[in-house]
Amino acid sequence: MVKQEHTDSIWILCEIKEGRIIEASYETISRAVLLSRKKKAKLCALALGYNIERRDLQGLIEMGIDEVYYSDDVRFAHSLPDDYVQITISVLKKHKPDIFIAAATTFGRTVMPAIAAGLNTGLTADCTDLDIDCKKGLMIQVRPAIGGNIMAVIETPLHRPQMATVRTNLVSLPNRTPNRRGKIKRINFFSSKNSEPCSEWLDSTKIGSKMPLDKAEIVVAGGRGLRKAENFSLIRKLADELGAAVAASRAAVDMGWVDYHHQVGLSGKTVTPRVYIAIGISGAVQHLAGISSAKSIVAINKDPSANIFKIADLGIVGDLFEIVPKLLQEIRKAKGRKR
Amino acid sequence: MRIAVLVKQVPATEDVKIDNKKGTLIREKSEVETNPTDLTAISQAVRIKKTIGKGEVVAISMGPSSAIKTLREALSLGCDKAFLISDRIFAGSDTLATAKVLSRALQQLGPFKIILAGNKSSDGETGQVGPSVAMQLGLCFTTYVTSIEKVTDDFIVIRRLTETEYERIKLKLPALLTVTKQVCEPDLPSLRNKIRALELKIPILRATDLGIADSEVGLKGSPTKVMKIFRPKIFRKGKIIKVGNVRKAVKEILLFLEKQGVSSQW
Ligand SMILES: Cc1cc2nc3c(=O)[nH]c(=O)nc-3n(C[C@H](O)[C@H](O)[C@H](O)COP(=O)(O)OP(=O)(O)OC[C@H]3O[C@@H](n4cnc5c(N)ncnc54)[C@H](O)[C@@H]3O)c2cc1C
Image (cartoon, rainbow over all chains, first blue to last red; front, side):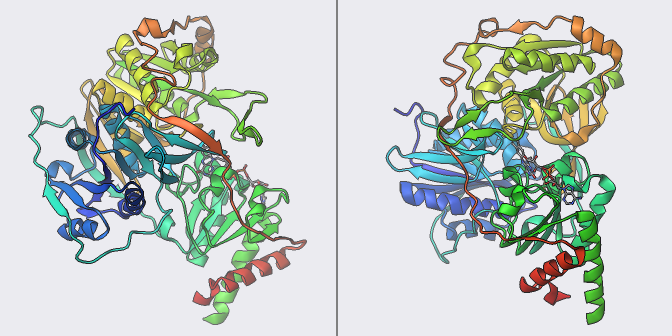
């Protein structure tokens, strides 16, 4: 028996940055399309933003969304949760979806728990997989549990909507069907009585990332094996020479050797490069969770029994402090010859 | 200014062993520690109090009785008071139910001008409890805070990190903030505080003290249910090359990179 009344629709949250729908939200649509086929449910998207590119909204229809609900308002110009959460809750209360999902971005992970609390329903964080349990008609939510050592299958039997945030960079973007028909509706909400928001955006500084990690073809990653902050420059130098992005294990990030946005793994990013070079990384399951779809993996580790060797295509057992400087030298030499 | 810090005790080891047959946890020595990010939150709270010049910092932890240890640590780091929220009926609570309990405790022990929490625990890593508590209490909130730039009696200015930028946000107080480890370097306990931590009484609040019914918490009060667990499989057939000398190792790597078409771009 389902406790909360609902309709048969599946909703996704479209995150909008500077007027454009972000790619992670499109990935969420790929997931939702699959769910809606199994459930034969209507697919709806909620897009709250400012100066929204209209062809992005049209694009949602081509990707398989049946109904797009949007609001274009200056109060959504910055990703502040106040109004965003309130208005989303009121829209969801009105439309009563069965399922509501969002990408597990910093924004999704910020507003979704508040929205779930407002609706008094469950939310599963950072799912790696979503499916439909056809017998029960419930959404199957798969996420790492107990420190990522195992996966848990989670369901929300009685509360609606069933909510989840979904890991990004795991599935491909949805196919488009040009001229697919659907509804695009502007939401009118009552301007809330207490219209002065409690938080205010002051300014932003873009983080200068030479090479975005999640799109990189080559990734050089360093772990605790580097021993201290100064040594992490070895990773940066090698990445520079190879035109690669810099990545790190959680241990390296925790030591403060490198920023969090370089972290790869369960609680960091998922990467899908052609070559992933893991240096001084033991290969904990949580780290492997972020690299299992890399096309190839090279590992340098002095411990022959390190877990990373179980998944490396090329495993080099040896001391990184001897190997990496020499490798740098050889690459520079090779480049010099060609020039 | 009264500041609350939400802290959690977590397993100290990342290598939890699993019984493959039964699919359950093997708890060898159940070592525990304070969630590292929460230590940062504690130190930050104490610093805010010092900046403002008056007030108190209250550490609150929901967990089993062993979490007293975590609260003693909080006191040794300069918190003025500590409360343990503990009851058998809380076991098995998901993030919504946990946030419900913490909200109720904050209401009872409050009012607080600022509530700080780590942005996530090192064991569950959902990051959901902070925002959920904020919503349940109707508080202004933000997440992923990397530094605190200014605090007054009425507002706070923070920096936070998203995928693409550092944002500066001004929040009216009262507000709840979840902080990352970047927010400050955790302090070391002073001898005086260590002694005080041992002497101070840490009250334990039960469900009945907070007016919580057992239908609201634990497995019963949790909308999400764990149906089963399984081991993730990572398939790959790797080959290891043990290279005795560095030159040969480097050669192997270069050869591999060439095969992958990396060096063709040089
Ligand atoms: C809920 C949860 C989420 C997590 N999420 C993540 C995540 O997203 N990403 C992540 O990476 N981890 C994550 N972890 C942590 C993970 O369990 C490991 O602790 C972490 O990956 C270890 O990092 P490491 O491999 O750099 O360090 P270690 O495990 O300490 O490995 C260091 C390695 O370096 C090698 N080494 C040392 N010196 C040298 C040398 N001179 N030359 C060559 N090799 C050397 C050692 O042999 C060792 O194998 C998570 C843990 C939990 C509980």
